[in-house]
Length: 63
Image (cartoon, rainbow, N blue to C red; front, side, top):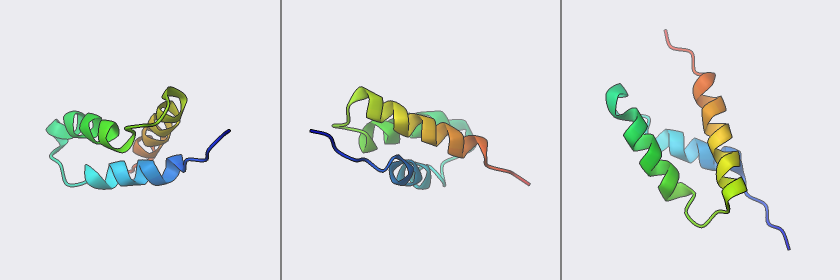
């Protein structure tokens, strides 16, 4: 039996939750939201979400 998780949607929710956090507290807030939104997922599903979050953070262009 398999299930489908939308890693992109979960990554968007995590990044939206930490959007307004000060830059120096970003890592703590990001870790907390990762735990919150990936609770109950298997390890490979958590890794898939973490990779998507890393990808989305890497593509952010700041002016």
